[in-house]
Structures are given as structure tokens and as C-alpha cells.
Image (tube, rainbow over all chains, first blue to last red; front, side):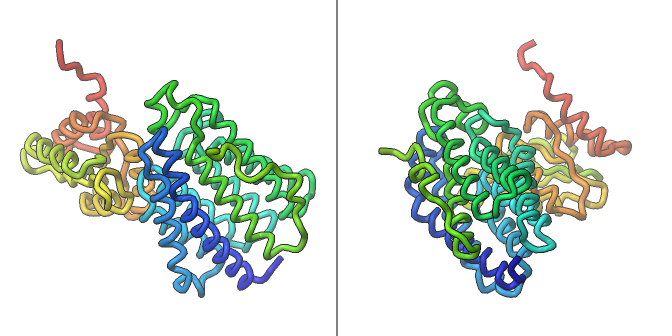
Length: 232
Length: 128
């Protein structure tokens, strides 16, 4: 695996890519959230990851896991609402799995810890129309691809992104059981969940960054076209 | 004395609840409002953590919350406030805070007894 310096660069680049993507998708996420929530998800995510990306110089001397942890605490202070603890708190908690550096093995542990914290904190299971619907298939697919199928991390991540896409699509035809959208009851059916969608965007940017750092091309044709369920 | 932190999406609601409860506690209770966030309506883990640290004189803190993200941000704030022992009461925020304020002024009050008194408020009925 790459040395600590390269790992830190990869983390910082991933952070930049995620921040940039969420800024681009701000309006789209806000539109999704205005249908079934309080219309602030786009602005919240842009602000949180933007603030974290602004700290690039501050993060320049840290160990990779410390950078990840500080991204979490920055999100906690700047995202707001339930997304602060769900995204930021979970990243902060899961960062301890990366203490020994970022390897295929520790990345699986990180993904699992992140998922566990999100589920524990938010109390949502699959099928509640939340970010968990994208995360569970992504994390399960990633873990299985690495641990059982011995796939290279890049290929495992590509499969995880594909699984997340299908998870996002799954949020459309189901009724919200958690969060503010659940107050809408049956009216939430037919709308795509903003949290699952931003989770997919983050994963897509992690894949994008991993492609730059890990050898090997991903067979993009094997994946579904772009983000599913995007407003036509 | 056990401290109380009142976490509402509205800073005004948190202040108002703390004000009413302070009167019930005979003016002796340690009640810190921690409502709203930087944008107005919302909850902030940093504000709640500061509230916990302010309310804690070493005996611990009970946190009263309203809905949704208030619960998650209070949990997160408790994890961040590593020097304070703090717990969330699963109680209606106004009635729970009043009950808790009365209990904290009792000489025998413990974290458990304050939480229990706050949670008694779950069963209150207003019309007979």
C-alpha cells in the first residue's frame, strides 16, 4: 500500500472532489429535499464539505486517519440538522479504523464502522427511505468483494458504487419511515431520498479519486448509467 | 448539583422552558438553554456541548430534548464532552424539564433520579 504521505494526498484529493461535486449538486439535492424535507440538504452538504476542503493547509501535516477525523469534526460543526451527526459524527467515529493506515482491510473496517454508526445514531433500517438504503448495499458489496471474492479495492469500490445506485433507486417507490419525510406518510412515495443521493455522490467521488491513485481501469460499462432516478 | 441542559430547535423555546423550570426549581437549579443553531431553527452539537460543560459542576448533567436532530446532536455532544457525565431523558421537553428542575434541588438527587422524574412526565394528562 502507498506510504502515509500518498495516502494523505489521496484523502485530501477525495475531500476536494467530494466538496466540488456537492457544490455542483447543491440545487439538485435541495430540490429533492424540498419535495420531502426542509430544503436544506444541498446547502448544508455544500457548506460542510466546503469548510472541510478549505482546511487543506491545516490538514497538510496530519496522518491520514487524523485528516479523516478532522473532516468529521468540521462537518459536525458546519453541516447542521441531522446530517451533521449522521455524516460528520460517523466519519469521526469510523476514522479510528484507519489508525494503522489505509489498506483494503482497514477500508472495509472503516466502511462497516461508518454504517454501524449511521444505523445506530439514526435508528433507520433498510427500507425506511434514508441514506441507509444506499449505504447498506454499498458497504455489504464492498466487504464481500474484498473479503470473499478477493477483488482489488478499486474494483470492489466500483461494485459498491453500483450497489449504492440501485439503493438510491429503491428509495423512490417506498414510504419514508424516518426523519422529517416520515411526517408526510404516503405523500413521500415517488420521491428520491436526498440523503441516499448525497451518499451516492460521495461514493462516486471516492471511486473517482481511487482511480487516480490505484492502478487499473474500472470497467465502467459494467455499471449502470450515471446516477439513477435523476430528474428528467 | 445535577445540571440540566434544554435542547430545542428554537433558541427562544429553550430559553423559555429554562425560565419556567428555573422558577419551579426555586431559583437554585442549574439550567442551561442550548437551542437553535447558527442559521436559526435547528440544533448544534457544539452549542449543546458548551451547555453541558456550563451546566456541570461535577455532579453530572441531564439533557432534555425536543425532536429528531435534537436527539442525535445531544448524543454527539455527550460523546464530545468527555469530561462530563451526561445522559438524555426520554421525556417531553417542557414538562420533563420542570420535573427534573424540582428533583435537582433535592438533597438526594442522583442522575438516575433526575432522569426518572423527567420521564415521569411522559404519562401526564392535561384533561382529567
